[in-house]
Length: 532
Image (cartoon, rainbow, N blue to C red):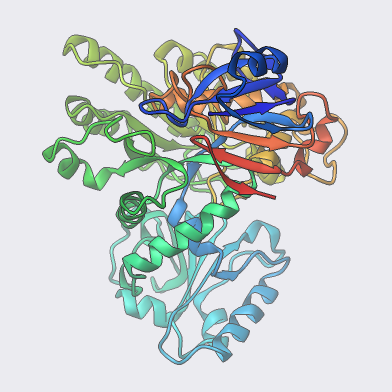
């Protein structure tokens, strides 16, 4: 056994919010679980001679944090991609030129992170990239992952020309002659990766294994992964080798639903390290490329309502099938129109579950970035978790004000949803944003960027959260939606000993300091997996 003594423990357990010591069991079948939580003198006296003792020198202990929306394989790959997050489009092109000079002809150049909303010159085109990389196919994903910028060799490799049908309306941007310009939205952007040579399974395994330490260093002990099959294969391989160091909930892509049902997979199948989550669908696009589905047009495009990729009936038909297979739903939805359709589909699904005698599964809605006021209460009424990314608000606030106008009042509406009883679940959507949960906590509590902008009160300050609620979004919230709330998300007897050690107390420090908090150590299942 192990006693962590002389600590300041923030348990997130309402029945025992604070303590100074905890005992971790090392005997089967409860090895790696918390045996007792209490005061140092009491626990030292009770377990004296039976447990090793680590003096925590009054440092802060919190439950391990979970990123409830991450694209794990894309994130690990992004660490080695060309960085396209530049101030100007010309600078991005220059980086491609430098990469092309170092890349053999015919090999792919891949990058990530550009945002045309940061560039005065706006979107680029294939010709920009052709000029600096004529002999290499180039594939650059935008920061939202809902738009890509490619050159002519890449279009040719994927067989995209003027005769290629749009997989979504307007998904292939075209010039006046109908020729592709090199900008691909939504499902059109997915056509390119199909012709890029895929890394081997061993490379994916190595990338994720190496990235685990990076995630431990920011306090993460769990992830909800929204990448596809190759990511799941890598996670399974790591798990089988005893090298998986993050508790992973794995979503199932909609296109794999039939296969999942056919072999009897259901939500919650697995163990405490790797388990099945819900079926992932996309109801719309994203804010930056103006593909999030809206009731009213974008402020700067009078005719553009975004892209509604699925309506309520299409969603319900898939959800109905999933329900009979014991699979919950997890649906990407950003615009107010898309969110309205998804919630309407969920209302149908709840009625269907009752009529068919099916269990009420833990469905979730991913992002919920802007909501019609009439839809706020529906999350709690239908018991649909609002899976949101606080760091998106501070990253996107200028775009929201510019493109959605007055609708910003119900954008990233964490406080409004909480007050109406919604279950909040927080993540990062990495590599869209950083997976550092303390950056997310800072955004949730202050609605400010690191430099303090847009002011002392933050952006749309009526939506700020207190620190405890924000932390629950990274702890008890993800545990609940994963069906693990009886053993994960807080520090209490019988719970898994996943925890982090801090020098700074997020409950008492000035909110602006949350951004800079850096864990000193991370424990998973009673073992220190990383120490500073």
